[in-house]
Every structure is written in structure tokens, then in C-alpha cells.
Length: 304
Image (cartoon, rainbow, N blue to C red; front, side, top):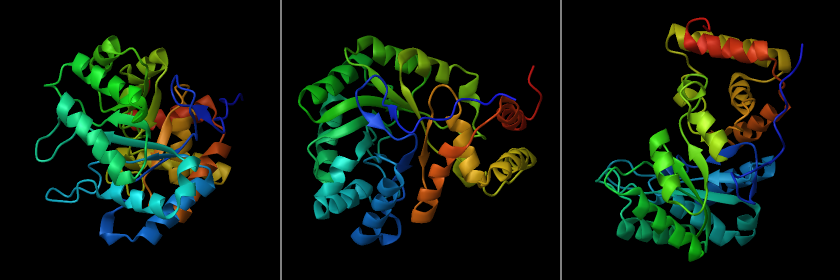
């Protein structure tokens, strides 16, 4: 029985010359529970030491509805200020374009100031990948394109990505861009499979974008299934994972990474041990039969 290709040990970020790890570590919970700088540093070290080089944050990470906007970036900035040698080891990604209490704002004035604020909070000169967090319907894509490209020209950001954009929104922005959109960040998991059939990943392959998968464990539902469908997916992942000596979460990451679009799961764990464990997904090998067994369980019905 033939095996699908093994995931690479590293990959290019879209059409850029930046090399990234096949998994990323997300920091949306970095600033929770008053985490100290030393505790945050331990997590950053855990990711980098495991071989995860893409670290993903956002200016809104830490916001609880009333305060905390920018807290995750600021805490990372304290880690980098204390240990400047960590910065060259990472590909730093952040997101902007949401301004509480308003939902989304990518007007030139606001987005330019938001990029500057992210740089100050993280105490860095450049963000390797800046992603628009969610699309602002009230900003013309041509205005957004110029703002982002001006930030690249000024040396503030190195590459440009999007998050939670629809396919037409990506096409519209790409039309007005002279630089490539190197990444897209939708929700993808064995429980959120729309992108496998609705064209999202096909578009990513066509445009040369790296797809980053946020919430690759279905917001934790894969680890604690709450209905029959979730339990069926978990059972298939357990069956395949046990045969290869890995746990359910690692099998979920491996399942995503087996797709030819080069999906990069964003690991959300705040446990150094779980962060390191995730890299076991690189050792998994998938048959088409096993890969499709997970998909069929997620669909809840046979393939046509």
C-alpha cells in the first residue's frame, strides 16, 4: 500500500525566500493568567528548541472584551528585550486590523498606526509576516494593498498575509497588489473540513500561499468530543495514531500536514511538553485509505 509523501522538515513561506518550520506556535493565550516574563520565555524556548520557528501572535491577543489589547505582543517584547538572541531564531508573525470596540479597521491611518504599535510592543524593527486579521468590508482593497506595500517599502514588515479572508476577498486584494500574498490563515481541522472541498486550499496552491491552520484541534473538541461526529473523527485518529505510536492531537496535526497544499498547523498549547510533542507529526506516514477514513468520519457520510 503506497504512502503519501512525508512532510518536509522545512518549507518556504509562500513565494518568499523565508524558510519556516512545518508547524507553527500560536500565542493567543500567551498573556493569560498574568504569565510572567520568565514563564513566557520558557514557552518561546520550548517552541524554538523543538524546531518550531514560526511564532504567530496578533495585536488583539490578550483582549478580554474590556482590556488587554496588545498584551501578548507586549509580553513577547519583554522576552525579546531580555534575550535579544532569540529574535534571529524565529520567523515572527503578527496580525492587525481589528480595533476594539469597533470590529475591523484597515483604513490607511489606522492600519499604519497599528503596525507601528505592534513593532513598539514587540520591541523589534521588522515583522517577518504581517497578516490582516479579518477583512474590513469598508476599506477598498486597493487602499489596503497600498498601505501594506508601503509598510514593506519602509522596512516595517517583510511579507504580507491574510487571515479569515474569503476567496473573492483574497482575489480582490491580490489584484491590487504588486507584492505576493504569501499566506492565508483560515480555521482548518479534522472537524472543520470545508476548505478541502470549497476551493480555499485550491486557491492557496494556485496563488502560492502557505495555509496556516488556526484551531487545528477544533477548539479542543477533538480532545473532548461532544457529539457522535466528533467522537467518530477522534476514533479514527486514535486508530491511526496508535498504530504509529502517537497521540490524537499529533495525529490531527499529521493529517493536516499530509495535504499537498502544505498546511502549517498552529499549535496553541501553552505546555512546553505538548509543544515539543507536536513535532512527532513529522514522523507520521499516511496511506490514502487512512487519510480518507478521517475525512469520511468528519463528513458523516460516504464520499460521493
